[in-house]
Image 1 (cartoon, rainbow, N blue to C red):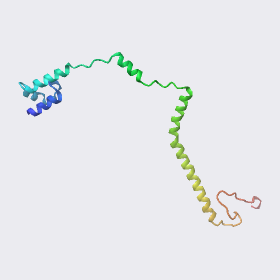
Image 2 (image 1 turned 45 degrees about the horizontal axis):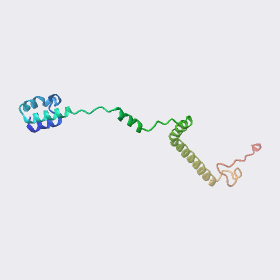
Image 3 (image 1 turned 60 degrees about the vertical axis):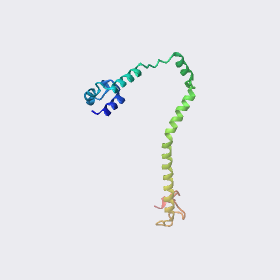
Image 4 (image 1 turned 30 degrees about the vertical axis):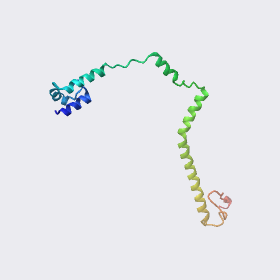
Length: 144
């Protein structure tokens, strides 16, 4: 182990050998004996360990609770409206697909009626001159 790698271990993991990677622990302990870098790291670790953050007081908790927004206690009608409003948002895609399907069906029916209007019927007497798929067929059942 090089002294540079040992200094990296001290910077990353501190002076406690239990925190060092197990694969490098024995080599680092051999380098550590009598080194000034380990003494400086031990001093830094003891200084950091001595620092303690005091627990928050009751006044801080009271200020946080006072600053928090109050929960919404709306009426039953308001809650029902919000619930319905969120459900409608999920139904918009379904309604859009249904309306596109309906529009496509109507467009197809009109296209077929226009195409059939221009075709000559087998017997000109059966259909009126401007017949389409939506016109009523007049047939005399008594003649059949």
